[in-house]
Image (tube, rainbow, N blue to C red; front, side):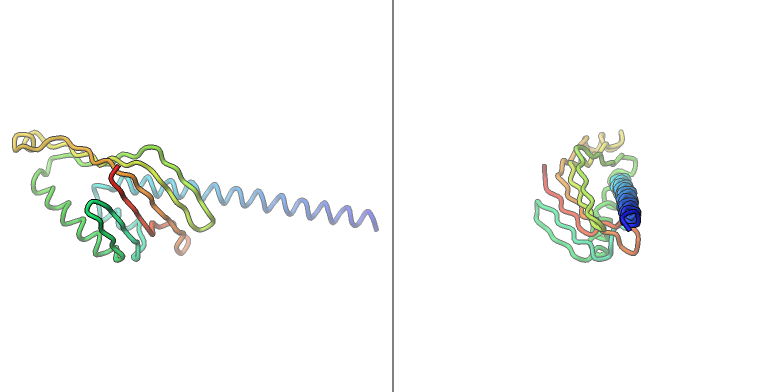
Length: 163
């Protein structure tokens, strides 16, 4: 009887350890997926139609200066695309890119939160410089909330403030 109890306890211990290992591996995979989503978010800054694919349809977007809150991601991305098109018309050979610094990421089951500093950089072409444009960097503080939606990580909330 005592031997049977010891064997059961050993099996229970093995099962608990197995669950812990599987949970740790799953958490590591989620962290990798979340970081890949954030990389794609930064890399698609100059391709807003690609960036919109990273977001849920009901993503909430809050940006300051002037303060704005959008709850319809399609409308929000359309507005950002209009600004992007106008900038392309002004200087189609200029370079626009984003960089990210000091990223902190936390995963909580099927939700994740990231906070980082983002720099939106504009480098005009030679023609743009002749037309009076100059290099600029827009420094921002960004918080992104992500959720696993139908097995895929999506951005569901973005808050941007001037740095």
